Image (tube, rainbow over all chains, first blue to last red; front, top):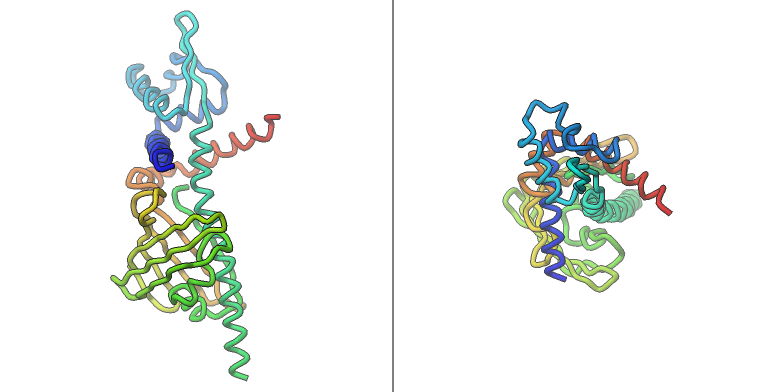
Amino acid sequence: MLSYMVNYNGRLDRTFAALVDPTRRAILARLEREDGVSISVLAQPFVIKLPGVMKHLDVLDDAGLITRSKVGRTVTVRFRPEPMREAMDWLRRYERFWSKSLDRLAAYAESKEAEARKKRR
Amino acid sequence: MTSLTLVRRIKARPSIVFDALTTPEGIARWWGPDDGPVLVAETDPQVGGCFRVRFRMLDGSEHESSGEYLEVEKPERLSMSWRWTGGAEDPGESLVEISLRAIAEGTELTFTHSRLHDEESRRSHEEGWTGALDKLERHFLVVERSSP
């Protein structure tokens, strides 16, 4: 269980680290719109050179956010949403935690308010 | 998206809500993601004071979080550092900020939990990948819905 959590955290770190960079976000946004883009086409809109794009793709690949497949001389890149889903699940756990807690906090405070009013009467 | 904001309108005056947030008796009544019991609630609501809360979930697992009060301005503002203690949950320290505003019906509570994923996510949050993440979230929600 512990090692699972450590791996889980490691994966989340990689996901968030991959998303920090604007170029990588732009790459993901494009891959989200178009399913399967070759590296040369993917690199076109960017000022940076192909090796720079390749480095970003390596980071995205390490985070599991893309897959690369080679047919002949063309490498096709695809978006892989699973790590995003995991990151969102992680955030949703916090949301559930606080949402439930605050609902009960509200109910408790409202009962205290009712008590305080009764006393004053 | 590494920060979470929730707003609640509560039919109770701010000072009552503030006490519910900061007293052990209050915390024991609401803290936790399900109806499992709060086992320990210790608070020292003054700047530099600490809190520690331990709770058991209905699945039997126990969790503890603790931190330090950073701002204590009764009855309108409270902020504290937050970390899970002892468990394998998320490491690192995050920030909880609560503001209470008096409104006609009682109190509007704005709750923010931020810095949820270390230094990098804080930076990325400032750079504004919220939009990108939202979009990607929509993407996979669509994917989930369309898959059999």
